[in-house]
Image (tube, rainbow, N blue to C red; front, side):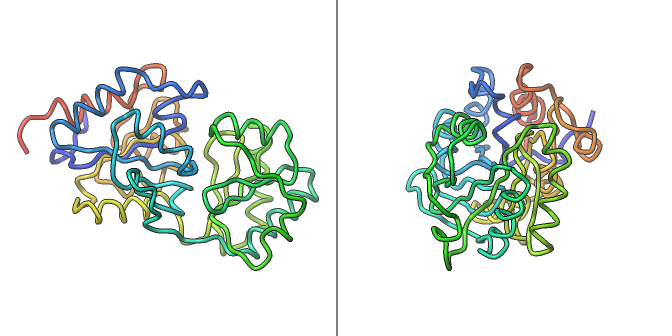
Length: 275
């Protein structure tokens, strides 16, 4: 069984598909494991595609404080103060190309700025996101007018899970080489600046906390988690993860229903003795 070479000093956790499923319920075993590690001096952070406002309640449930990564790595926020510690904005021109392509193809696009999400109309796709995030959309008559001259944090095309598998190619084509396009929740195709990914943002957090990246344990479940599993000293894939993630991970644990995050912490942090 693979084990970290040394005791991890920081645990980095994705949220959707890792900490919880569509029910948004964090199991008691996962809560206990995160808090037990913190009691041993091994804190956790969140590394998610979510907005900060949709991340903070879950971090507080887990007893997590300090910096957390949001928007697939495009921004880092402090849990206690809400201060934005880092942001790499998506250029307006890229966001508008994505919007216009989605509009022409009959797909639903959303834009994010100032920790709010914006839509041109409410529909089943905006309501899916609102339910998962626990955040109400801001409706604008025109993205081009609402964001004239402004860069954004992220764009997101929301469609069916099946359609997203192939429509991601159309989004990449529209976004161009200036963008980072990835999948997260099966229905989402997310677009950030090309210099963004979860691994780079995790490195920012680790440096801020004084933790070497080779002492970070990371747990994730989807393609967007690959950069931060690669960047961490020890990467763990959830049992529900695609093979591409499992093949690159140092270990594989159970899915959400089987408390995979708790398993990872119990096996690779709590079970260790010594430094």
